[in-house]
Image (cartoon, rainbow, N blue to C red):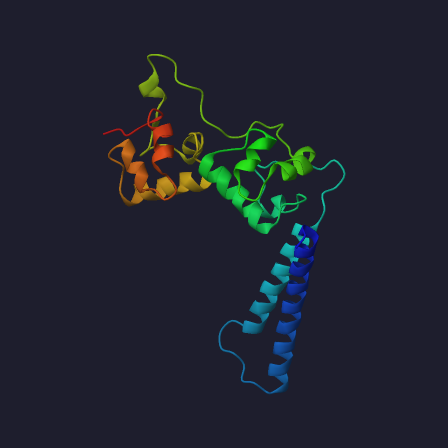
Length: 211
């Protein structure tokens, strides 16, 4: 199924859902149903249906002439607007940059399943890499390695996100993990969901845990 067909089906599903909710509410009124206690269920469903329809409409909105998207900062909904990138792939792009670090150039997108060389060639001119992506801090100079390391128990979210392979989602998980139980050593990062041995080795010389 083509990308255009997928988007069309999404819009049709949203419209049908809205129509079904309206019909459901009308039938209840005609049947003299007892009003639902608490929040109005029909209004809630209608609101969700409208939000779904708006989401599909925004995803299907084509990019304007010369408009480009930053793959390191755009939301999944914005990435979905790129030609050849569907909702699933857009979400995979966001997950990849949060797990493995930012994309430095267009070809980096091929590390995401569903994005091949042909897709990158199709969207290359639509990608914006002018603003430097968030990335690791400069390597510490000799003799200052200990001071330059990030303290896992005290670092701010921005400092954690500057570490290689740590995006916003992993930085938040690190903060949640240390709040529940402070780290006693760098290897404690392995208990954070999304951080495996490979990422741990990349971070080992960049982090510390102050006693």
